[in-house]
Length: 257
Image (cartoon, rainbow, N blue to C red):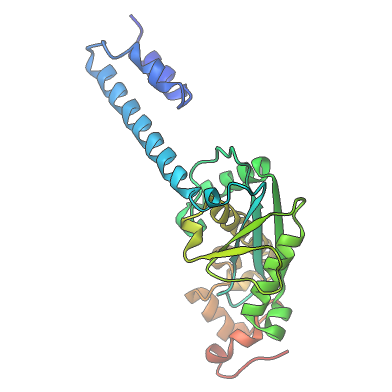
């Protein structure tokens, strides 16, 4: 008879797809410790099956265009921060995509976002990333800068999508047919993937910029108006990467240049 510790190792190391078959050999074991391991494995299987069902729904919009070889999902990160660029991403996923746990990047823990970023970059047909600086944001406004970042992202794809799925907005100046989906990053796998790649890209950049401007806490707040960031602005004033057009209400006057 196998030791409970050995059974635990077998079950914990089993691939989730093979776990139901592995589990059968231990179901007749009457030891309480084994029963608990079996129950735990059953919960793991149930959670996996629930995630498969959720991801099936996440491809609802992609399935609306069966004739399309490539569908691009587009999202942006960084419209609200007081500093740094706005970043957009366009992701084309394969039709047989098997990536799980795609969701609105804000709903995904940081460690999981990093893991998903690597998986998306490895499995996607193509990924395009666009970025517009704080200077341009001040010059043309954040909405127009967001559109420009999205157009850049589309232009950097290695394939041309037949259709675009976009989170919340309609991108002007794009000839590819597009569908705007409110809260699309929680409803479309392609948009969710773009949301994750855009956020990880921008977060990494702001963490790196923290080394140059440590007083603002960019590694922690990513340029958003967190209390420590606001306090630093009032103490030190804006740095080179702050969006002057965003600071009027904070510093008491509209900052330019």
